[in-house]
Image 1 (spheres, rainbow, N blue to C red):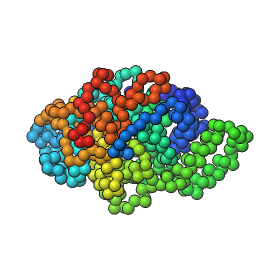
Image 2: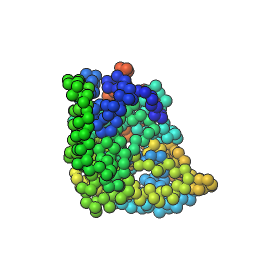
Image 3: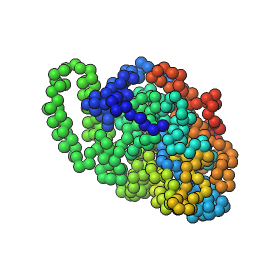
Image 4: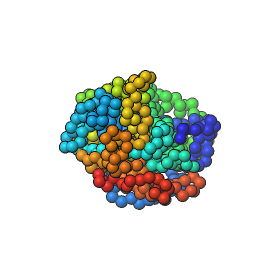
Length: 458
């Protein structure tokens, strides 16, 4: 599932290939590029993608917190203090939450106070231990290795809730903060239009230098000066009046500068938030990414992925967890409360997990020195908002967190539940460039294991 890029061609408009040189010349990368692709493909979309009716969605947006590398269920949301030191390690005293009967890791005290706002799935499973293949399964619902590369949840939401619903925002409907996950093509066969806009930069820095929108050290006045100089030097447009591609490029440039210099781009300016709130989120990349996500939801962005790296802890796992868990605790707990305070939690799904978990039994010996490896047999996920009930636990693992004990939940179950809350038919047909019969999610007839939608928390 690794990315493979043709050195000379990129996906074009409406399936027509465009050379990389042309792509760079026309600005297909960055904020202006997204707008250019959007403007040229609008008519193609209308001609090839019939509208699909949806009814009664409870959710309007999604924030995906992707624990890249896979987090241990025993050290987060499914502690096993009675399993012994070789399993629980130093985290032997899980803490009670504000929901009776639910306990989580002792390094998550702020999330413990918010348990009434989220539910925990303690029986996620797919049995795959490869980063690329497991990431693909969790984010698409489809098994790896097939002929087609299916789109991930962000691209599916961008299609059905964005372009088919007439999304008009200057900010792309699908955004990744800060770096793409890089494990597979997020858009799959849907093509470049459905890839996420990756912000780059670091939201903990001032300013947050969003690629293509904010340039560190470049004032608005200087940006405007550069634009004026570009127009002075651009004689081609004046020599070819009426050219459709040049007109589309000019329109994309105008929209891009509205994003850079207008109000839309200010969504990334965290200096507009109170210092006290920024401190509550945590003055680190993850905490400030959560604050960016809340601001993007306010602006109507449909799908935001926070690519939270650092969970692939083969070595010295517990040393890393003593740094990562307090970050996760502050950022996620504050995001839940902040969304609630802004009246946005009821319409915003939050889902937090990685591609798999970590091995329950700890490798104390050198060179691992207390490490945990990849483990797809059972792991945990947190879901909140957008129609998901809070204060519940779905499923269970066994006494040592090694296998699912009850109510297995497969990726297709979680994704299908999210799609239903968003008003997206999980069986809806996806547009395929070759006209193949492809759908949002597989069914049992496709040989995919499933345990059923999460009706107990919907």
